[in-house]
Amino acid sequence: MSRFLELEGAYLIVALFIIAVTLFVSTRPFVSEGGKGWRQAVPIISLLMFGFIFAHFYMTTQRMEGVKEQFNNGGLILCESRSAQKIERAMLIDPAKDGWKLDGDIFRSSMHDRVFHSARCYKYNQPPK
Image (cartoon, rainbow, N blue to C red; front, side, top):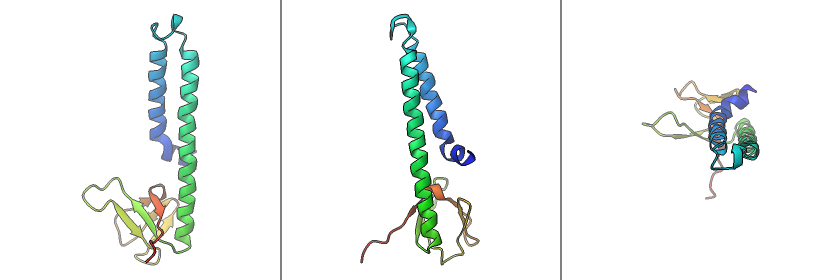
């Protein structure tokens, strides 16, 4: 559950905001007679929002597992960092160099100050030469 909240917490807040706007708009008298349009609108929007969130969570965790597997097999990983704006935003992680290790879902190295979450990493397949 904590992994879900870590990865999807911001999207849950956005979804709740969208549901609140839907509730507000669908209860206005100009939308439906007697302001009862919310009985249809809120469940539909809620299902859509949470469906999208769970689909995103599933795809993200599947990609994370693939990244971990490739890293453990000695493959290259491409990671991006959204926090650093003044230096390179992406880095190629090679498990054979710079002492990279996987600590839970976080890539760490004693040679680098930055850490990378595996949710922001991708399997790097070298282009053919």
